[in-house]
Image (cartoon, rainbow, N blue to C red; front, side, top):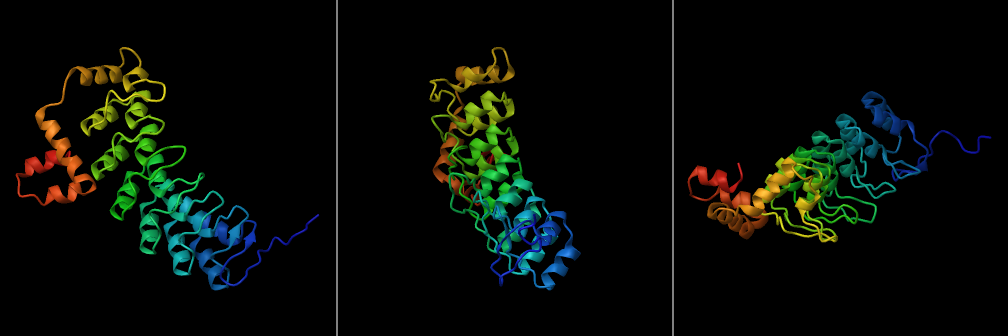
Length: 280
């Protein structure tokens, strides 16, 4: 028996609890004309479904930038949270939509929303999906490189676990801590587990500790298959100390921290040296 109307109920502009509405559907399917029609007809852009999903969440999850713009211009709450605590910016980063991310940031979306036990940061979401362009955008507006997720650790951990070397490079060049640990497990442990040779090389070049031991007292090399390329790579680093040139670069980058790229680019030194210090 039908106990509730299928037609959503609107209360001013603060939204309400409802099943998925026509507004949600239009936003999710990228139906801009229908969405505009509904908004002009008085539909609340902040109506929420039973899981706290708003039409803006729907549009961002699917990378529908035109719908995102329509909703934001009509007053959609840019930092609305769903039942898991995720904001539209988290969803746009997960979807890898640079255009949606730009729109949300232009409308004041927080790059560093408070985290809960069920929430990952927008930067975590970008790195989880391998969306390095979104990660770069977030970093330029001050996203916390060391934002800590209870289950995943830092964004660098997430990028390594999910085998996204491009994101690893973006994070490290921005100044992320290469030896950040979760339960004593470093990003290099994850790269070794996944047999990612290029990622291992990048991490070590940025100062990863090849002797770090996790909660099981195991080094990164202990997670590689004997005779594999990743094992050979780590064994090479164990037997071949870094050059003075490499150590000097690490010292400079460590001293400058997250300001390294900006400061180095302004130094009156040869361009070749600037490129080396910036890992180009």
